[in-house]
Image (cartoon, rainbow, N blue to C red; front, side):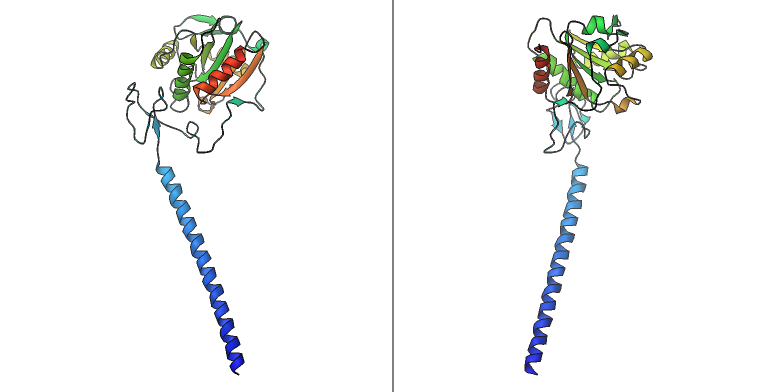
Length: 256
């Protein structure tokens, strides 16, 4: 009898231990879930603002850049990758291939209202870096344009110089006057042409360059870089650091 009672007490104790362990595991799991949800909410509340001209100037609150006075813009996810994100400076994949011979010589207008033939006047015989923007953009266009300006400032002097080109994906809105204002905002120097024109001709150009989109807001921060003389073309991520973009552009210019 005594042995049976002792065995029963042992079994009861074992059951209680199992129950306690289950409770502990359940409590830990619930705590981890609550902590994860809290952290997610805290991250969602963090809003970062940056200067389009000086992206290193950031703030948790809206305001103006102390260096240039431009209004700080909310940084979208595409502009501010999370920790550990590895964004390749050079893009590849299923984008259509580019060849100098396939670039149309369409009629366009620069930011000063001057009529140009795109291929003949801006690309032929040159190394070019082309990005795609629109002047009412509040997402990637301002920081991408600011990066282009820093690239222009830091590019080594070459003969012939590197030609920078910004093509509007919204030519119906982006008149030469609007492009001129946009270029002035970012202090674009000589050798940087902002391109707009007739919708049909710009659409033809964007299609040939692999940058056509049905909705202007869907355009990607891509930079098309090419050496027309050697027919070498590549693509780069437009929000890479200026140093990285200069390396890619210089490599294209030196391509034999």
